[in-house]
Image (cartoon, rainbow, N blue to C red; front, top):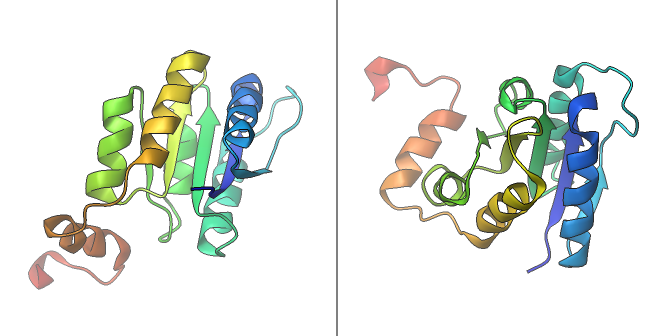
Length: 152
């Protein structure tokens, strides 16, 4: 099934972003590249926020966030309540992020993962549906900003 996918990175992950965007397009997905286009230093939070906004606005079904480690950009994307971005490094964590957490974005570190492993993670992530059931209650707690320990 073709999806609308937004992809963003910082300067450390421009090469990985281009490879993954090509990979997604070859599979028939619609890809929105949110930048950057060059290797000049940029701030990963700016691109994590852009990615989260694309998802929140409904312009993208899923997001791919990339930086040197994948950590910073995932933190930035997760600041938006509509974004559930999981940092992954192998296909199992990518699958579980979709199945159990209904993640709508994944983050990877260009300095920590090779292109082929990143493609495998992305493919695993997109192939899995959210299981719902017992996981739905937990996801609801992630997206409800008024949730408190007492309301559990």
